[in-house]
Length: 413
Image (cartoon, rainbow, N blue to C red; front, top):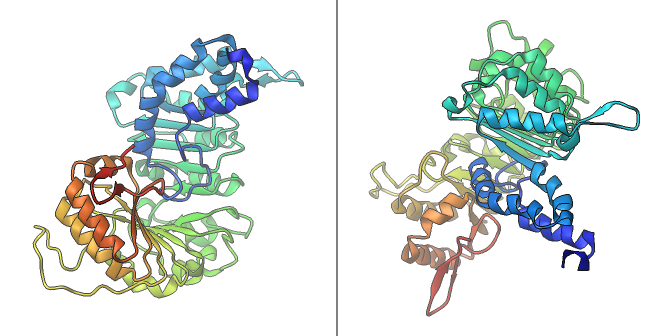
């Protein structure tokens, strides 16, 4: 039956069957454009049986689906990394010039390496990490999770420089203090790089760091950067004073403090701010520098709601400082799942804080699933916000709840 349809049609069908929306979006600057790393891991686990079964259907399916299996790879075990390297080496071939070609590694566009469970990496060798990058020249997204072993900065730079299409680089914060100088080479020399997280903060940098000599030196460095952080030490010096740097910048992540001069210079470019685990009150003093701000991401558990105490009881209402330009707010739960009292207070607080608000998005799939058990409350939240012309949505833009006079259904799938 597979021979009755053109290969191109089957390929599109298989791509849909294997796809995780936003997973390969290398231009994503925030959770508005991509799923969280946790959501990606869970979605890959759910789709793994389908991905494994497709190559066994027929010879044509094997030919078409094998590249899809290698597009996005998640490694959570040292032995899996070793097996992947053996596969890449086994499929090496010579190109037209007689030079070794990476084989299956050419298909890899996203790579996640998760070190959160240390016991699974007892026999890991850092050299294996450097080697895998040499087999993946078309890698666009690299995500590192957990506590990493000590790395050689020179080897890491050399290996990442072989990824000529790298656009999104996410490394654990504990990696940065030891390789901060090498990381700057990566950030400034990979011309395709658009986002990198997290970035070093002043407490990560040893004494003697001179931003004017170590930081950005010319306008061509990081010219494609679309996202930055509020406390990035590399933004000190030339880059914080000259608005000609980062012409495509539009997203700011609020980490561990703020570089006031950078915000005063580049704030007019910012359209999206992710507060990470910070409170909205942290940004209020700087709102005047963000005249074009349209989207904000808040942590439902961390945002300080003026009339909600830590116990969830009501206090005297303090009207928040309004930001009239924001039209979309994304809600996450980075730290822990909020109580229904906090959600209720949050949904009452946000319209007051953002008078022009049109949409509230629950950005993490796990958050949507946890809310699905609170149907009656979601109906009340939905109706309350609808009266203010505000949509309560999932991350894909669909309404969180579908309801009419007789029924109400949480849309969690």
